[in-house]
Length: 326
Image (cartoon, rainbow, N blue to C red; front, side, top):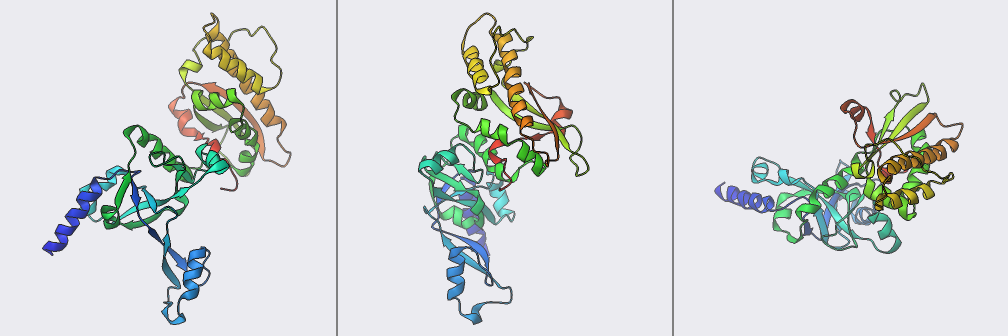
């Protein structure tokens, strides 16, 4: 018993030195597969090779699958890796295999349009943790594995956010998701000014329903852009003095140009341009509403903060995860 306790202490000490996001060299990972209808190609291959007598009454088998790069990322939160957790009985840690993604698919994954792929830049540009294949392993595996890399302090908060994305899709009605597709296309488009606005100015987008979502009535919502105060000064909107047309791209160009300028009326123009741009995006969304969608009206507004009640009554809108297919 003394030897077992000593080994446990060594494992606990080694695991406590790791961090969420640590990349470990682990050549294979296990997963549970049905011996009756295996879907994973490795599982099918293993199950087909099993003698009939070796298949137990559970009709399932643990399959060891080789990791594509020989690397995995530790998903378990750092606070749960402390020695007392391991000694207290937490025997497993959660890991995800690192996959190599290159070319056009890498650009898509880096844009966060596929939440199951989490960038791991502390390994390489091509490295992404596939959280869709996350699995648990004994803590001794993590304790004995070679540590390839660990995230810096500045990278850990963003990592925690990215790891939550695949599991925190807001409970929006499918018809509303469809209605918001024009906004998703604008945000994920290639127009330089719009990309800068969504990347630099917009901190969060939240969806506030007029009333609780229900199959009994059409959903009408307000989409709230929460932006950095530097981009939205607290002043009355100014006068544009010109017509900008119906295209939000052109308004976005003017908004970015104004933000970068030192014009005397800069702050007032910024406030006005946010209103003008969102009005055009709002029109594009509502003009494309199909009659068969159970959606009343979509309104867009901009703010630097929300009152607590509005925050609790709304859902965060993750445009990279706005899909009926995910």
